Length: 277
Image 1 (cartoon, one colour):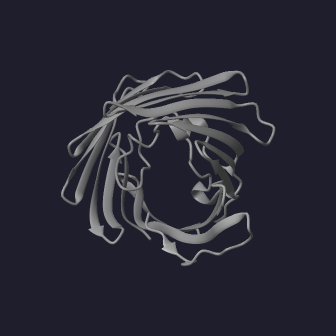
Image 2 (tube, helix red, strand yellow):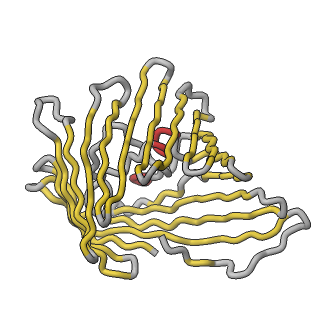
Image 3 (spheres, helix red, strand yellow):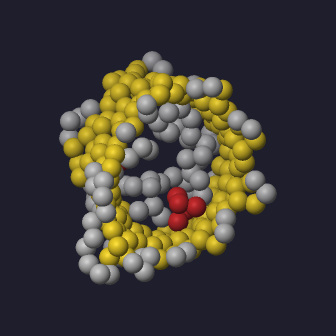
């Protein structure tokens, strides 16, 4: 997402701090979503506020909050995410994704331009303010990066007992993602995702299970032709034995604006104009 720089010059704070800046970004959409025979109007506008500072020794500290309003007209300010980076190690506090979301590529199988329909049973948010939710789960996540691989571990700061670990990386042009989550020391989730890019096409295979439920195997892919991206997934998520599926299309109109539509399982449907700045 293209950022609008608010502080165009570095601010020298102290002898131990090199520079600081604030950035503003955001986006939204307007359109229809629901079922194929019952579509309803929906919209969203959000603003992301990011601040960062780096010391002379190379330690970086950054923070983000998000303001989001939808067609209900109720705006919410999210809890903050605070990130500290030193060399190959990054610590994220507060409103941040757990390791299974950060490392298992859960959005890779999503179709359309909003990412609402996806072929995964292990789900989560990178930033917990979906649907105006200002009360995110407070977490701490440790990331360690070595070459093309990143290892993550995370847990809750608010007394929860869940623990997540994951690793992601690339080898010979193939992206590998593996993650495991133990929630309340009783139920586990896991995800394995392998994907790669071949010319204008990206294809992947995902295998995951949420909290001990039956595992879901998903084949997904997308391809870009000019300004248009087509995406699809198929999986075994239907308990009746019928394959789950989703198809979507997104057309780039330029300047961060896109026109997109998606349908999943023959019933769920949406069509939107999305934008980012």
